[in-house]
Image (cartoon, rainbow, N blue to C red; front, side, top):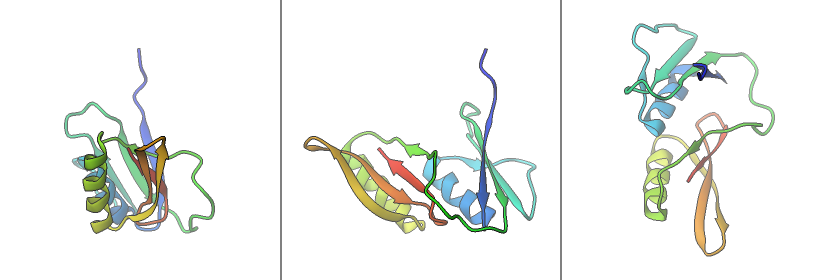
Length: 118
């Protein structure tokens, strides 16, 4: 039997970061969760883990030791998703290739957290 879990994230602006990740992942705000210093998003189909964001006073100071990979498939789909996320506040860092094909794109979310679009 698997264990249910939630990914917890520190944030300077939890509501902005939750809105960004909801868009990136197709999630929605968690019903009934209404905190000024926190936000939570959930998979609307109830299959994937919830993600919570808690306001913390200290800034991000180092590279993530763990990160999210947004998996969309083909190179054209990756490019479309990258453009959508840039419009929502993400920053392009670099393309990463294994051989001739694009493998993934490294990006930063609005608070500088690394993630990949693959």
